[in-house]
Length: 316
Image (cartoon, rainbow, N blue to C red; front, top):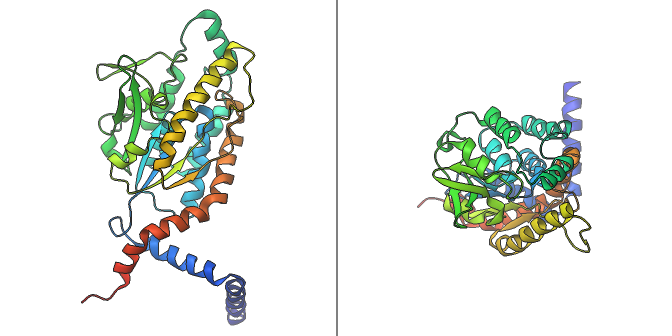
């Protein structure tokens, strides 16, 4: 009986292999070989996570697909929501725990980051408290430091006094991530290292340079910019969102050229404050990553061929 089951399994595997084209079989073989290489034998992969506020939760779905596919990720860099997600991933959060963090944002849709609270901000001329975000980061990251993470990680903020871009890659983690996720005009500037800091997305929407600073040699970027096309704001909140989206799009166009491959979840029409759609956003991230996964693999295989050749060739 065992032999019969084993024979059926073998025949099924053979049939599936026969249905694959020679090109697909070769790609699969090369990919398995790439996965066996150590950094240095292959280009170091930098995963770059863009800004995007609630839209940035799509990064969770993207990471989930990359993780399941065994895509090597050596370095992580993020801005704003990308910094939050990137810090959790670099810190060893499981896929289930990261998904839970995003889902809880939907359940807590009455928190400070909601449309009602933003309207209140405009009417009262007062910046919002960052206490809920600080609690999220402190609960998730505690007193960990950058050098205690599973993967090298960097995040970006801006000095509101000088306009200078600040790249954090050492020291305490939570305050650096907090500064990176600090939307100007919404939250109070964060005082850290003698600087008043605001959201890194203002100066570096897709922080490719931060990943390269850590040694990344091949960049895979997840980009979640807003889509402001054909939209005319009819109120103050809409105008604020439009300005944020336009600024992000301008920066993104410049910085995305520096990435080797892009994954772009379709989240542009989702408001940056709409936490009620957080699960939908993560699911859209998964769909985009699945759709573009093979292209990312093919691109990375081509960049890894020199390492594969030196790995295969016989030693003299």
